[in-house]
Length: 179
View (spheres, helix red, strand yellow):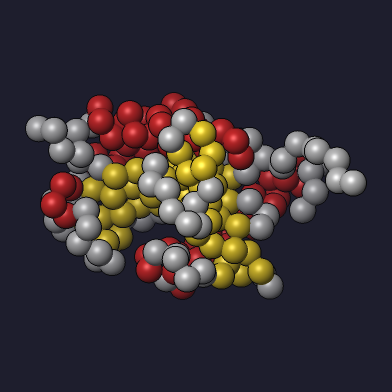
C-alpha cells in the first residue's frame, strides 16, 4: 500500500506577453509580490507563434519568461493563477488586457502551466484552475506532448526550461530534498 507524503516543492515560472516591454516589467514586479524575487528574467523575444492574442493585446507581441527563486508547494499553483488573472485585470486599459500572464512550475518530472480552461489533458485543481501538463522531463531533456503549444515545443524554450530545472535541482539539494 502506498502512503501519502508531501510533494516536493516546485520552481515557479511565468510567461509574460505584451506589446509593451514596460508593461511586462510592471507585471513581473506585480507577480513577484506573490511568488518572490525572480532568479531568472529572460530576454524579450518577438512572439509570432499565433495571432490568438493580437485582437486583445495588439501587435507586435513580445514574450519574456521568468522564474522565481523561492520554491513553492505545487498546490499553490491555483492561487498564483488567480493572482496573475487579477494582475492582468489591474493592468488592463479600456476593458482590454495589456499583458497576458501564464504561470506554471517546473518539477523534477514535468513542466505544468495553470489555465482556467478545462480539456481532456487538463485535470482540475481547484477554484476554477486546471493543470496543463505541457512538457515531460525524460532522458535529461524536456519532451513535448501532442498538445504542447508550439512556442513551448520550440527547442530554445525547452533548453531554457532544462537550464531552469538544473537550477531547481541545485536548490533541492541545498534544501536536502531528493533529486
